[in-house]
Image 1 (tube, rainbow, N blue to C red):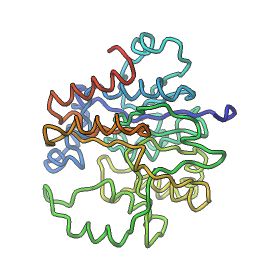
Image 2 (cartoon, one colour):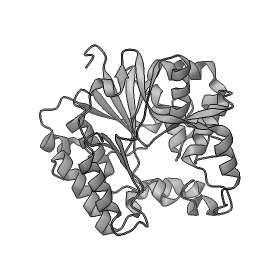
Image 3 (cartoon, rainbow, N blue to C red):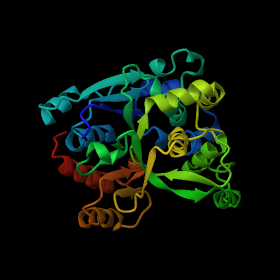
Length: 325
């Protein structure tokens, strides 16, 4: 580990079960948004306590982290007792960052219920270190990490691969309509990122894993391109017009020869336990057990899993981190 450089973690989090959140979002929803999971369906904001396991994974497997910033909208997961009981010796601090802090100077776009808008603002967190790693609350570390799994000198480790813009645009055109529109996919936002930088042939496809960022790079880019910053933060809900900030950032780092391309084929485990076969969870856990290289895990839409699968997966994480809840 390079002891000179601090590393912070930023996690975006929302408790969609909170009555105050439900009341705040209600006036802005239309019928299409309500029933579209890709825009504002309930699963976009559903929470079954993943944040505790996400935080535990950092304390357990990335103890070199300096500070964890949790982005929220006037909410607090109340971590103090959990940390005190499970990690009493750790020096990692936790700070809650409200949307009003992220959007200072741009308050007219609040309230916002859109992770892509929020991700565009992460570099604006006061006191954030130059090196910071962005997590969603369903990202988990599942084995020990080192500093150079994310940063190597002035370079970042870019987990992902290159894909053809033309091919994936063609696939988008044949994609069936759902709820009256073409679904706004994760891949589509990455293609839009490449297009914003006038890339014509390929884009960088990232995975649902933590992203090592550099504050100065994003700050410089959005200072020079304020129109892109404003266009990306001005949507209350996810929009096909938005780009993925992390994907755009990786392209900037590759252009500057500061990104080390690294495949996720052997070190990433993705699960989405929704309408899967009875053996799905067992098979994924077996993959983890038989592959000692897996360090990163994402469990998507856990709120939509069966109670049996949800309990099984949360117990699996609890055992990995050796925690009490």
